[in-house]
Length: 114
Length: 117
Image 1 (cartoon, rainbow over the protein chains, first blue to last red):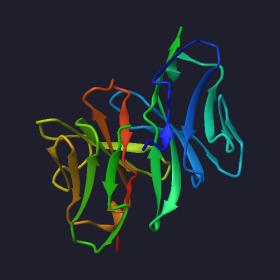
Image 2: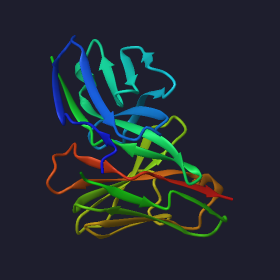
Image 3: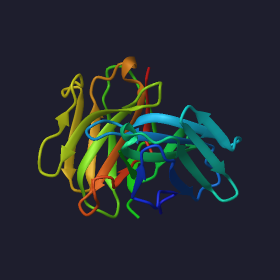
Image 4: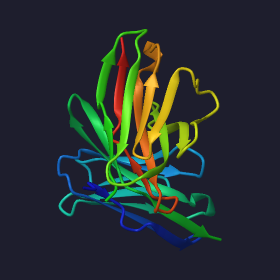
């Protein structure tokens, strides 16, 4: 059972426009959410995170929104740049068995067109 | 959907001992498996990649004799930290890519917190 879902495997956006990447989850016990960015042949790089007690976190061009009632989070990138083209993973963490566990989505490939 | 089971989720071991971490793809065949180590800034550092039927390819700076990776089958990969030292304490996570999915179809394990005392 996929507890964290990224239902859009790919997304294309024009340079300068807004990119919106979505993520849905099923476990209401998740208390922390993260977004990672991955270039080919590299490991995922941490991008931005949000605690479950917040509904928005902003860092430069990147903003993450959390809607707990809908169990949905989204990553907004504005304005989008060609260098943003990568695979984006959302992840959720939950405490259990004496440690945090991370559950990742399967990724969304973003292509920003020049 | 594709599920990767990673265990143990947490392990504490004594310095000098070896620890094995398992990563299993439960409902798909993983043609490629990745092992990552998470550092304090929360980025995941790729340690090695193992492809079906071949030996693991280690990233630069990763000691292959210390971090033994065995892709025993299409559904099982193991990472063994040999002669563990406190500096090996970290969060290790595996990821698998299935045969039928495109190259963004990664499925991650839930991670293993290793503490070496």
